[in-house]
Image (cartoon, rainbow, N blue to C red; front, side, top):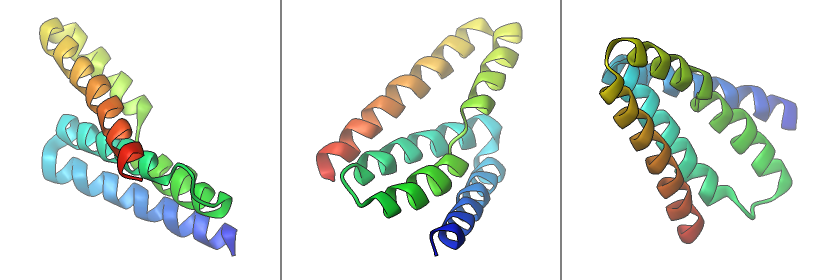
Length: 106
């Protein structure tokens, strides 16, 4: 049953990331997906192993994207370094703050 849950959660996470990218653009979609994923993972801390595996690893792992963030920072860095620094800082600080808030609320 965990395997089926894993597949479904990964599909939902990937679909949500795709939707956010379309609705908010590449940069906005990546930032919202990563920040939301950080918050939700903070909420998951302390849940059962099955829940953490399925929702955390599959669902939130598919929702969030470190590789896209790094690629976007590289692209921005070649064209607008100041924007790249701002985008990277907001992504990092926002993700940590969101995870902290999730931990406090969870």
